Amino acid sequence: MDYFKPISISLSPNTEKDDIRLAFRLLFQSWRWKTINNKQLTINTLEEEFKRYLGVKFAVSFNSGRSAFLAILNSLSLNKGDEVLLQAFTCNAVPNPIIWAGLKPIYVDCDERNFNIDIEDLKRTLRQAQGKKPKVLMVQHTFGLPADLDEILEICQENKLILIEDCAHSLGATYKGKKVGNFGKASFFSFGRDKIISSVYGGMAVTNDENLAKKIKKFQEKCDLPSNFWIFQQLLHPILVNFLILPLYGFFDIGRLILLFFQKIKILSKAVSKKEKKGKKPVYFPKRFPNALAVLALNQLKKLERFILHQKEIARFYGENLKNTNFILPKENQERVYMRYSVLIGDYETDEILKKSRKSKIFLNDGWRKTPITPPDTNQKAMEYLSGSCSTAEKIAKTILNLPTHINISQKDAQKIIDSLKNSIKHL
Image 1 (cartoon, rainbow, N blue to C red):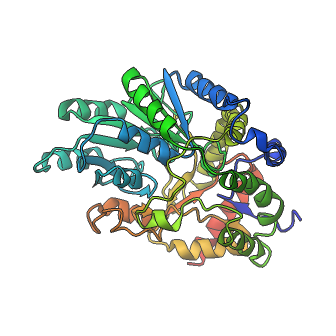
Image 2 (cartoon, rainbow, N blue to C red; image 1 turned 180 degrees about the vertical axis):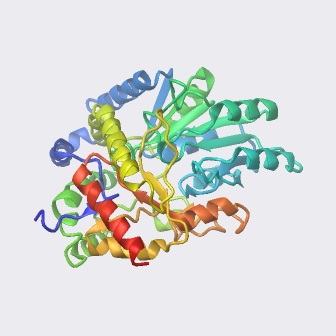
């Protein structure tokens, strides 16, 4: 079966044998799915461990990063229609909670050097603000590289902006020795299927503000737990992906067809639903974090430092072997983490490179491409994005290629990816 096993950037990339065994056991322990003696023991432990790791005062869990973000927005005493600044080149999971909260997303361009918010364009946007001034600035640490928080904090102070950090990509990253997630009024993290740590779905809202924490906690308590069937879907995901879908993914497309079939009949969930791509809210957001998924997340959290070290080693290997090529490599930073190793390919066609890689059983399409609000089949108008308003973000989306760095990518796998990329551009 290893002959057919492909190299993939997604499909539960972080899961190891112990994670799969844990998910399998939980599948048959339904009494652990939500509560134990009416107490969510593992959830409490996860929140405490998360606080300890980040060095924050308060951490409140939810069933996704977007649920956590929505909880923060609903706890900030904002008015309907208030504007929230955020960068383009982001996932629809970021503007959607803004829209669901009755607020207005205002997009700022991103910086071509680091894919984070463009500070100069942020200043221009604030100077040109008419009528109501924006109330919130949401800063994304894209693919694990911290944004320029010193300058951002100064801008927030000058313009009376509430800073929220999107740390979905950056668990474990630091800025001047301090872990990201500590700089804003609040921050949120994701434990999605392809994040730094994964429980298929899951997220955390964190803050050092006691009053805000009380409001977020109250929001959490008003949320229902997901249905048993939803929990079942998530527990089944790492099992089916690793034992059936991924081994057959490179074998005449059978694995991909099985995945699509299971998603169609709702045996497995999708990372992003059709509704979300249209700006609509699925019924399973926002929800509390079920105990079963907290068990998976806690197991992953214990392995976080090893995951980060591995990411950095693979990223270093990519950098050493892709320098002096036509690829534009990411900005180096000792404090970052590498949820992805992102390269820009200039004038080459990403579709052609991905197509050639697939012939070698290398699957690099993670959906972070083509459009400024990803994945590519997201309705940009529904996200309230105006075409042409963020030209750099649109350019990056057309020229970016993300390489996997997760724990299941060996140096041998990375070399195959490098060889495939070099071979691809020779024939384009």
